Image (cartoon, rainbow over all chains, first blue to last red; front, side, top):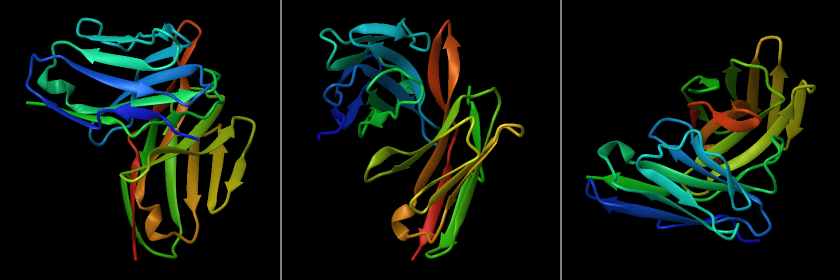
Length: 115
Length: 114
């Protein structure tokens, strides 16, 4: 069974440029998560989707970040414009449902460097 | 803000030794999870313990939970070089309304020397 797929794996951009990350969850998983992980820290939730609905986006900085999951399968996270402080690893995860006992499966992440 | 705090921040042991990592959390939980992260396999779920459980085993892993002290521990027995990784505890925390988010600690960096 294929795991969570993310692309690109690495991205280097200059500040003020836009950037987008793509995630394809495990087949059949209704719940999709985007996390941000800074160096030396644990992941922090940005947004959670149940199918195509964003049910928790309270941690997403909406002035520059946006996300979509149009058909309830793959998802895109966008930053526009990027700032130096956005340099981090962006992780996508999926689970069968949003039930708190469900295991989350993580992708390899996208390491973003903003110069 | 972090829900769990792991201790120690870093741990270095020899292959074959046991490794113990601790996690403290702040608010009531219904379960606590441990994850491992290394460069090869990314972030991987290891084990989940429910609030009504005190101990759980999975292979060489043993997790305990003390809800009265709001703490958990992860024991890895007979460690191997491949166990070198960062270990995170995580627990659901209210994120607003009826939403819960899995909140991670800062992790313990375990190095197992051959």
